[in-house]
Image 1 (cartoon, helix red, strand yellow):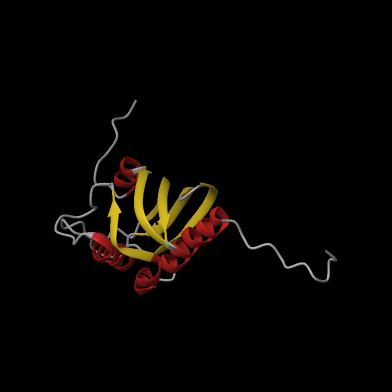
Image 2 (cartoon, helix red, strand yellow; image 1 turned 30 degrees about the vertical axis):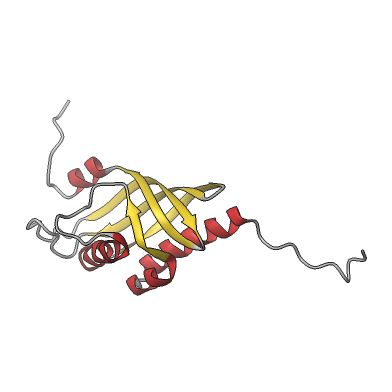
Length: 153
């Protein structure tokens, strides 16, 4: 087959899945929580404890959580590394923000800058995020916000 008649290769499923996860974080960084309707399955399962009590399950709960965070701590995500195999995408990322609004539980705005590292695993099915697992540095975040203090050594 001559180069003129060959068609470009379509991206691998893993490449498409990594793109989906990158778009997920890009939309969140833009404050576009409604984009989750296109990116996330309605029956989405987050295997981490909910960040706040009383949130809905599935995509609706995810939208609630990110809406709360966006209002109180606008910021951005920086993807450091991404690996995909089969239907799973592993993303190592750093989140940056400023605590400018009240968070549930009565945590008043501190005006402090925040940095949180995480490793997230998303499972993709039919072009949407369907499951999520995450390991976040929540302790470091709580120290930065002054919620807890570390003993001096």
